[in-house]
Length: 190
Image (cartoon, rainbow, N blue to C red; front, side, top):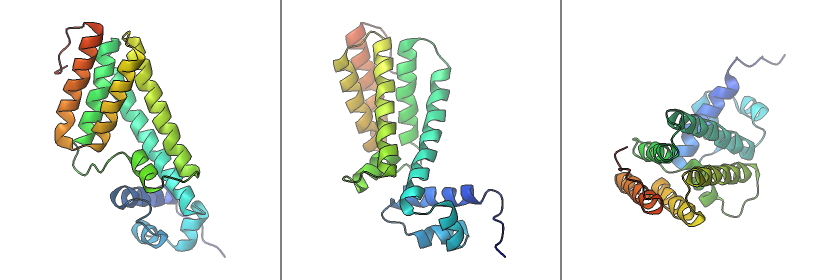
């Protein structure tokens, strides 16, 4: 008779895989390593995640959920469009300064698998497209141009991939771009 999995088994496996994938990359982690880290059997892993691609897609979906929660929290505190744009900038800067930050999970996956058109790639691409649209909406909300949105997105991409020590420079630069376009007297310390 087959055993009934313990409640939370799927989440335990996903949490173990997420830590491994983020630290070592999806390509660098075997399913055997996930089994060991999760403390489950191979059959149980494959019952919940029939393939590594499905596990990677679940991992990226989990990261998306966490990112959306963090962004919502950052934007919650203000209704002023400039404050919201700068709050989102600050939220990203704070994230990249965290110990153990190893880059954006979505960008990392797409770098590891640049030619893939699988479910994880679609999850990563959809998140990045939705994130870009959110930044564009925030820029439009301050009366900014498409060029300003492009410039800010370029800085944000650099913020996700650059050295954490440069996070403050990115915040200052976005503040300067907003100030130059809108004539606002905002400061980078907001």
